[in-house]
Image: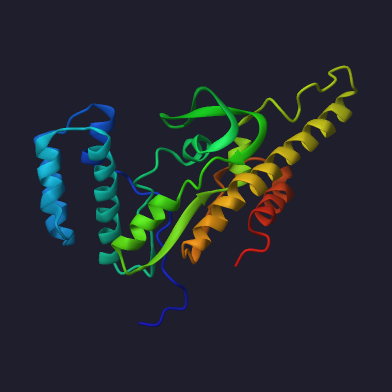
Amino acid sequence: MNRPLLMHEVGSLGKPPWRVKPFSAGRVDAADVEDARTWGERLGVPGYEELIELLERGEWGGDEKLRLKQWSSVYALRFFESVGLDVIYDGEQQRSEMYAHTVAHATGFEQRGSVRSFDNKYYTKSAVVDRPGMREAYHDDEFSFLKSSTDSELKVPVTGAYTVGAWSFDEHYARGLDLSLPLEERRRKTADARREMILDIARNVIRPCLESLIGLGARWIQLDEPAASTVPDELDLVVDSFNASVEGLE
């Protein structure tokens, strides 16, 4: 069927209880196992019986937890395939949280504790303490696994530089700011420091991540910027950080 617009999966998808509980509580219930069985059958997940055996065994070492993440990805792929979307992903089943996952694989950040983001959701907020860089290509293993698990077109959601910067404390770029300066000059210097920080995140963390994904064959990449709507006066910085992230990339 020809569609005027391709139908995409938007980004996140709730994780099933059997994916979450081994990490949070170290166990699954019989109802969780039955949930995995029911949806495995309903979605036609190939070999889902292996997941059932894993859940019933109840051993949660590193290998078992990795396999749980991968099974959750496969279920999500089959879910989106079953409703006929043109471009899919796994709903970020293997990630911890969109901000924390990025920062955990970057340099120049230090954790500062948990903060409440919305409702009763929390994330670990970090401070930029040095010029940021990418420690490792943090979506490559995930993308390679998904690519091997489906013939569908894949779209990779990546947290954007503005959101990473906006959700971090600045303890590097504005360090040593003279507090005796007139208010307007202090505000200008603080804004300049914030701009430099976010553009460095774009060039040194996000862009290398995108380059690596493209090298693995990623054709669709979605830059997620939930923080972009929070400071209307900084929309020009959102645009500039996006452009710095993708400049020269196909």
